[in-house]
Image 1 (tube, rainbow, N blue to C red):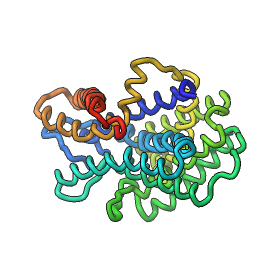
Image 2 (tube, rainbow, N blue to C red; image 1 turned 90 degrees about the vertical axis):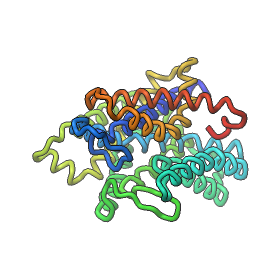
Image 3 (cartoon, rainbow, N blue to C red; image 1 turned 90 degrees about the horizontal axis):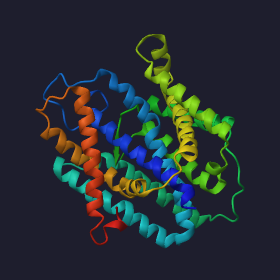
Image 4 (cartoon, rainbow, N blue to C red; image 1 turned 60 degrees about the horizontal axis):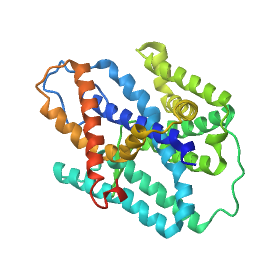
Length: 337
């Protein structure tokens, strides 16, 4: 079982690097609110919004899918009480510590990038509650993903997202008690978590055919290229008008294509990849304060906008993974990170 899941661990590592570089670029182009602004106005990359837009279409949704995939097996092995206890420890403790530290630093309740951990904890607790009330009576019947099925999931996600964005546009973050979420993308995240859990029960990842996986990857790449090609004009206007739907098709097809590609081509495990996988969760948690520190310390150093973007991304990734490794040597930390 472990060998077969190497590709999910490797894909999770790739997504962690993508998250770090996504955040590394936010100070140098429009990508939403960011806590650091370069003192040199020449440090700007107008084109990078394409990178942000394409990433946001799928990378956190795919994170939720992979996380959701592992939840049913964990619940089956551990049972209700142990599952709740371990999820609360694994997700709740980092959320409280990092969220508390950020809140003290800015003088208000702030979870920043920990919204993902917060939502994952909520989804996991809801899954456990549903299983407690209505446990699976029999093993689910295995099935196979198809292109029409992927289109149906994308259409459902897209239509729902389209109407949600009429009330709450993209990048509008809402606070509810101690929770912070972006309604425009939340349907995607919930659906991807559910699809991940369903994939475990129905055997979708193992049974996805090469034809379906390859076609999904090609369609996803074509949609991403179409998003990068937006430079104003009729095409940009069309995509922007229907972006909730366009983005959802990107999410489903890029995600399915990457899952297939990593299953077929990156389903390997070695010392380096295993090490990266073990540190990836901690690197996600720790990367933001480390990144902000590097950005402020290097503010007066001229590298060009792209050079600064790459330097910040690489330096943050190295430090985040290294610091996680060091922290995990401490007694009890591996239970949390």
